[in-house]
Amino acid sequence: MDFEIVAEGLGFPEGPVWMQDGSIILVEIAKGAVTRIWGDGRRETIAKPGGGPNGAAIGPDGALWICNNGGFKYHERDGLLIPGHCPDDYSGGRIERIDLSTGKVDRVLDTVEGHSLRGPNDLVFDRHGNLYFTDLGKSFPRHRDVGGLFFLANGASEAVELDHNHISPNGVGLSPDETTVYMADTMTARLWAFDLEQPGDAKQATPFNKGRVVAAMPSLQYFDSLAVAASGNICVATILKGGITTITPDGDHSHTAFPDPFVTNICFGGADLGDAWVTLSGTGKLAKCRWSEPGLKLNYYL
Image 1: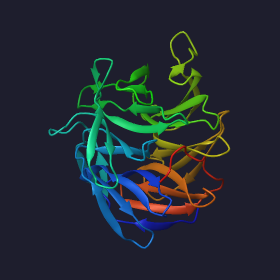
Image 2: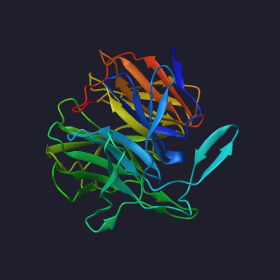
Image 3: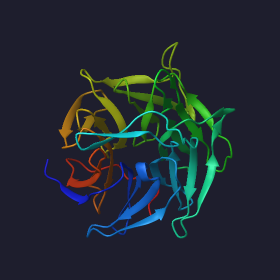
């Protein structure tokens, strides 16, 4: 895969969002910042929400919505920046809304059904403006707080839980017809599918789970954020193996390698949605390439 490096020196970049002016908005988790990057190398700080801004998406209101995981402890090894356990200055998990014209950050919610969010990670809006988002949970040296998959109806002030029977919910996306929510679980390297009765209402797949497993990887690797292609294939950023794992709805999979073991996210853009931007987070870089198929058009752009 031929690619170019669009930006370097980023603080664990994630959550890339393609903008119609050609720029990319992404988060720098380690810096607690949201940054805009142009193809000529220019960049600007849009906002500094602090904590750990993570997944990002344009909402139906024209604002940038982000998951904020509250922060990580970091360490460096072999030139890589590696996130780890909950930090001493953990600021709490929350969903935030950023006004792109002013940089003002508003907290949308930080609890679901009486439970505090621990490490919100990724999010996606459906065509009705409803929000699906994941919570990765938070890890500690000897235990882990688990998160889940959640739903916030357009205009609602409180979210509901779709499922929490997972170790580390991460990437989330919708099938082209929006009848299925896909969720990547990091530690198990499994892609789950939740078939919907209606928005926010997932069918029971087994006596134990609402979701069904689409694919599980055969060797040690970790799933991160994802994007869906126009064909319905699911492109999952993959840690340790270092690349993008493309999974069909039937579970077949292939891998596209990038030179960073911490490949964390992918987004599509360009006039034909055939360009891909990939965050190489361990080395602090943003890569751009032509993808093998166009991405799925999202419901909201700016």
